[in-house]
Length: 461
Image (tube, rainbow, N blue to C red; front, side, top):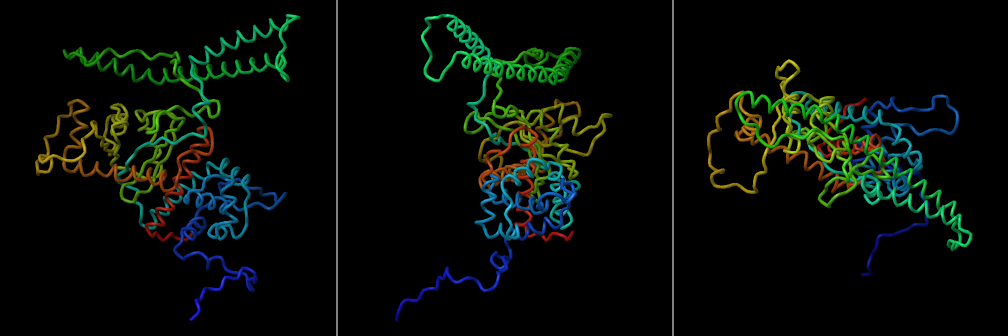
């Protein structure tokens, strides 16, 4: 019997226009994104209401296309435009239209308020369908370094800028002296002394602006550290007044002079050199708060700080815009007595109802036999016990250990999904404001994909 194959006919045209929905599985993510966009209010998007010019794409379509693309690991506006031709699910989402890359890039860059509003709305929809609780929840907060759209080799340090400016002054003087010599050796073909002098003057002006930026940053940093320095001095004085010897060396006053290693990047001046697992890279510090039950992101922001020491207050504000947290889980990098005290006590010293759990020391992997044995919780320290002792006690009780274990089970896997599954490791936009907008977009896309994975049924608009 002859071998039989499925008939492959690319020449016969389709007799009837197909329904693209028949080409995409019923449980596909694109259907969920379309339903979500129908339930979200996009009136915050600026549109041309005069009716002049070419027809414009509906904001809900552009937002849905961006969200679906980010949720499937496509971040470049040119690549997104290409998928509108090559990807069947995207063709369904766009109803077989093809927004160009410039339209997508402009929409993404200019619709920060819309993205923030849509992010809040998707959390509201998650609460309405029973996936997310909004009161008395536990939130894990952490930060991760995301590469900036700039190379670290496009940066200049404060000390190097000074040396480079001196070198440029010497070269300019040499060129001007050469111009006055009648028998001077000519330059290479195509090069002129006036053009070379002008190029060096422009480079010197660029370096001078970079040094001015670093000096302004150093001054702002000094002003921000004054309050912390004053608190440290007051703590040492109170210890001396109580007859105790203050611990550690005398704190140094903040310095408004830039350090020799302070840097400015010419490509993205608002990014910073930060330590990552791949060494020092030009990056931003992307922060997220994740609700431990649903594993939805409930708060986002982007920081320029290379560490998380001062990030807790701003992160809590970002979270509290959407949910009321009863417990916050942080790692030791966030621990600051002033920040935790301000979170747990109001201005009058009354409890706010919020409890912060943090591990103040790194625990070795594995557990000893003694740790496996059942044991009673240690006695609670007194109200006047040192801050570190009170914080350590919270994670030594059975309840505290179980609660704190949720931190690495929630926020760290979320960062892993964003970086490894979605492939989001570098921002496409530049500048803190635009980078913050893009981080909101990736968080929005993650939440939609998470809700789809949980099988949530979104309520109708």
